[in-house]
Amino acid sequence: MPLHSSNGNGRAGADGRELIATLSGLTKTYYKPDGSVLVEALRGIDLEVQRGEYVAIMGSSGSGKSTLMNLLGALDRPTSGRYVLDGENVAELDDLGLSTIRGRKIGFVFQAFNLIPALTILENVEVPLFYQGIHPHERHRRSKEKLELVGLGDRLNHRPSELSGGQQQRAAIARALVNEPAIIMADEPTGNLDSKTGEAILDVMQNLHERGLTIFLVTHDDKVVSRCERIVRLRDGRLDSDEVLRRTGILRDQLPATRSIEPAAVS
Ligand SMILES: Nc1ncnc2c1ncn2[C@@H]1O[C@H](COP(=O)(O)OP(=O)(O)OP(=O)(O)O)[C@@H](O)[C@H]1O
Ligand SMILES: [Mg+2]
Image (cartoon, rainbow, N blue to C red):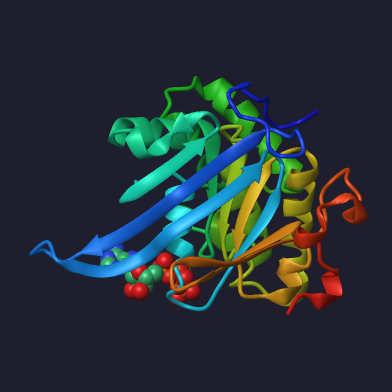
């Protein structure tokens, strides 16, 4: 069963699948206190992402990856342009609207797992539900279910310091899933892990992808990228390239030729 259901608001993309994110002419400018321009971090991004896609975001340091992730994750509003997320125009939302859309649709996974040391991992996963006023019994049930999904059903009462790095990241993924989001935003989720542990985290991400979640993942690592379906590269705040490696349920040779490349050609 998919982890989320569509709200039916999304427009269909070119090949008939539902669009979950549509960016047009999206810019983000950071200003100095005197109102003059400090940095044009994003200079006009056009992008369409279908529900269920697994997208890697790459680019050199300062190219705008985190800025784009902040916009995609509704942590921030663009300076200009349009961003329609699952049928809602994020650019027009106020702060309350942004936090509501984040709570309902988006789960965040960070490089530093950001778990609360004094809480057990079950309690850590319950935190987002606590803020929504969900009954303790229901909080407990849903959090346990997500921890079981990531293979930590036998570690519920451990504190983060009693877990390995990979287990802590799996707990952080369970926390990101507990609100049943449609989208997972992962900024270098394997950055603090050795390669074997990183692979196990990528297996978890693959499992979420197969359950229909849309995933945006920032990485510098070619091994991580090879597990994704599509690579969006940024350069100086612009889209440098957009390559589809494969698409679930669609053979690569059925994709439009301009957007299809051999995985071996990815650098
Ligand atoms: N809050 C901010 N205020 C001012 N400038 C910022 C702010 N955040 C980012 N920038 C600038 O915007 C540009 C893009 O930054 P961003 O953090 O998006 O890059 P990045 O691709 O994530 O880099 P890295 O790989 O180093 O994390 C950079 O020039 C950065 O200095
Ligand atoms: Mg960054």
